Image (cartoon, rainbow, N blue to C red; front, side, top):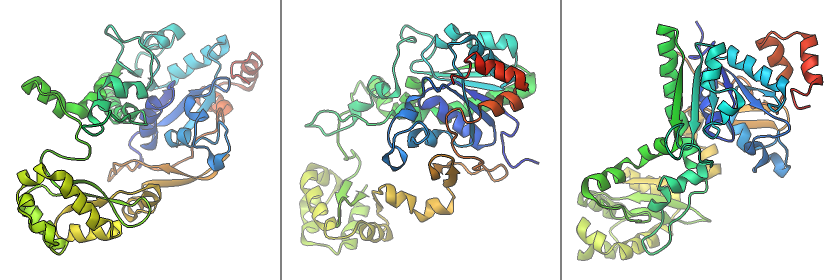
Amino acid sequence: MSDRALEGVKVVDFGWVLVSPLIVKTLADYGATAVCVESIKSPSLSRLGTPFKDGKPGVDRAGHFAYCAPNKYSISLDLRTPGGMEIASKLGAWADVVSENRRAGVMKEMGLDYAALTKINPGVIVVSSSNQGQTGPYASQPGLGIHLIGLGGFNNFLGWPDQEAIALTVAYTDYLTPPIAAATVAAALDRRRKTGEGQFIDISQLEAGLHFLATPLLDYIVNGREPLKIGNASEDAAPHGIFRCKGEDRWCAVAVSNDEDWAKFCSAISHPEWTGDPKFATLSKRKENEEELNQRVGEWTSQRPAEQVMALLQKAGIAAGVVQNAKDLYEDPQLKAREFFWVMDHKEMGEFTHLGEPAILSKTQASPRMPAPCLGEHTEYICKEFLGMGDEKFVEYMIAGAFGF
């Protein structure tokens, strides 16, 4: 019995930048055979952006791409050529699942949409994860996940009351959508197992992201109340925030949710004089005087290492946690114990750490099988081994420019 849940499932990714590659990453990590269709003449933006290994730019040295691509094969196709399109169609006929995240209508223009693919592969499952879905008045609007941060209203919730909103620096919805998409693909595969039928999965990244704003949305729908920017504060806790600690750029998150926890907090920090002030005696009082309270707590934490603050407060039953930087995370004993980091030898970058999967299946483990591919690294292998192409035909396509090189 295979130890990988999706062993035997064949996936082709026509995706661009992040969201589709991340959907396929999950499928590949759990055992699917995954092929990412790329172009040497027009590489994905994730191959062109920082960070690069050792700061040296190169399409095969981009950490952003490598993060999305362990356990995948790469084929370079020039989809502007008849030969490139023929091979793309052959991959569509070969696949169980085809994933893409281009602007609505683009795959149809290319002749690779669900209607076209189902004619050559009736059981194919096509998952399209576009900005706003395939239907509706704004479906064809172009854009990236970074634009959806504003369109989805995320920026409206970030920042402090007396300041402008703070913009997220990452394409947030690109990371929220893949787990939802992977689950729907699994459901479609299960249905196909029962019926033999494939289907089209239309995912709106905007709608996927709005699930993470359910509480303020419902608050407006039910109460007509717009949420306010409150920084690191909480309506239901004080102190509640991120407090500077001893050392360079070291911080600890602290949350005191009720008066019982406040008593524990005061005891844990040895009852400095200010903790006995009546203005801090109840949660409502602490909220009224929150600015001064945060200043007092920050004065105490700034004299101690973040790890000491966390350990002391956690021992007392107070929610507290070090704000970990990249170094802290990579050395975190919990993450190491769960083998979250997959270290593999990359052809161009040498030893490179990929991120594993957060869900551990007791019978069918996700596992590292091969590092992220170099661009077009497996072109010949895919054509011959997966598509059954002979040497002469492969050379013919190469001469015709189908592979872009």
